[in-house]
Image 1: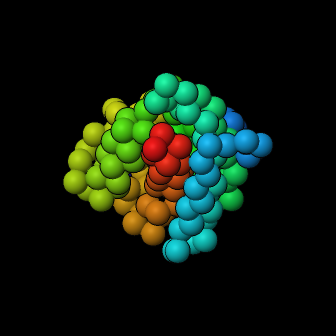
Image 2 (image 1 turned 90 degrees about the vertical axis):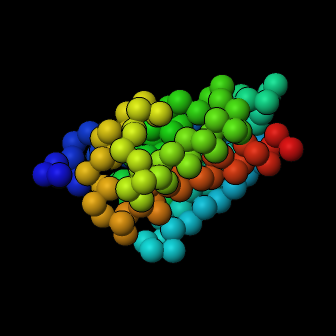
Image 3 (image 1 turned 180 degrees about the horizontal axis):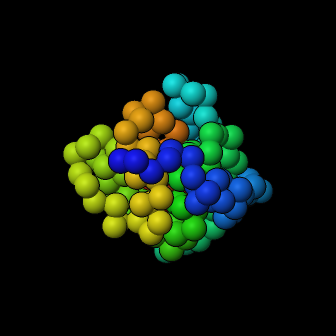
Amino acid sequence: MNAPLYNNDILRLATSIPHHGRLTDPQASVEKRSPTCGSRITADVRMADGRVADMGLEVRACALGQASAALMAGHAIGLSAAELEQARDQLAAYLAGASDDLDFWPGLTVLAPARAYPARHASIRLGFEAIAEAARMADA
């Protein structure tokens, strides 16, 4: 793929993360860190009726991790833990080359150029991993 890794769409997403900031009274909080680059994301959630009712994020990641977190946060409210776990797994499968499908989550095609850079995959997965785990913990 010839698309640049850091393009204007990724940089725009990285600076506009929805739900940026920690919740004061979360039901669950999860911090995930990439051992490769040190990117770190903390996700706080509150659930209602088995679905994410509110969330907060603290994102300290590279532009790709920030962009991925922005995409995740833009569509996670209202989803169940199982739906978030499925999205997490589909993203991991795409990045690993086991799937070519990015249609499971709005906007992820902007991250397609990063598939060729395995060192960036952990940072891209952080937001999806953190929110899925926090939702599962809060729902338990």
